[in-house]
Length: 145
Image (cartoon, rainbow, N blue to C red; front, side, top):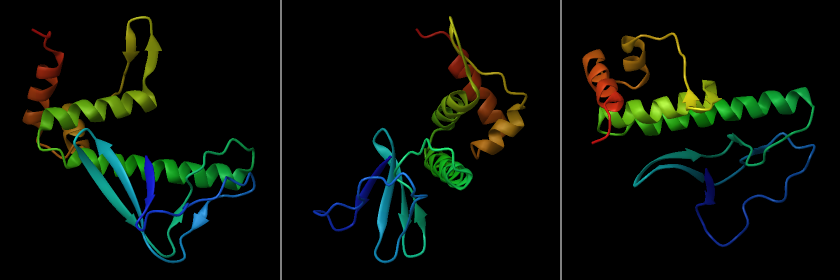
């Protein structure tokens, strides 16, 4: 994820402070872009929004909670970007990769993802109809020719 100031040329964030939970935007806009190949999703953050461009590894409970909230916010931005893709098969594939990153398990054969969800539930996750998702899953499962 790239954090870029609207007016380029000045450093947006100082070096991370270990005691910092993040930053409150007081004025102006911050554009956060999540890229998906040639497409992307842009989120505008402005006055009173909280942002944390730093990763924390400290034990503070508040910092851990704030970091988890920011991580969830980024996941929602990624989901919004995936929803903008025109092809259902692309939305399903990228959603499965995002779910595999979060819930998957590394095995000698690759990443294994066991989720107890139905095609209908996956369709609702990717903002599509169940028959389209079933078709997309069959297409993704077909051997490459």
